[in-house]
Length: 92
Image (cartoon, rainbow, N blue to C red; front, side, top):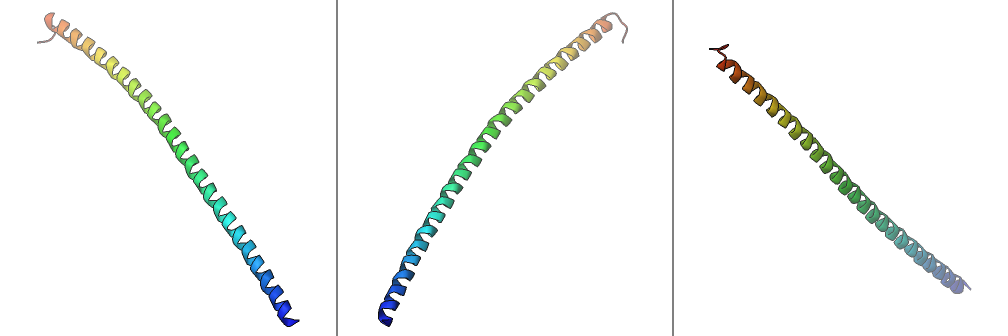
């Protein structure tokens, strides 16, 4: 009687161990899949942020170029006015 009971207990413990192992493997796999998805999602966010940043930098550079062009035109105009005044002998 005691041998049969010990065999049943051993089988129950073995089955519980196998169930625990299967649950552990499933949990580990689900965590690994979730981490992979999270890493891919973060990478895609970084790519999108980089594209947006690149576009913004291009806009700022274009704006700065336009402003420098306007400053160059103003300086040329000032230079022409100074030259015109020099020819009229306002300056020596």
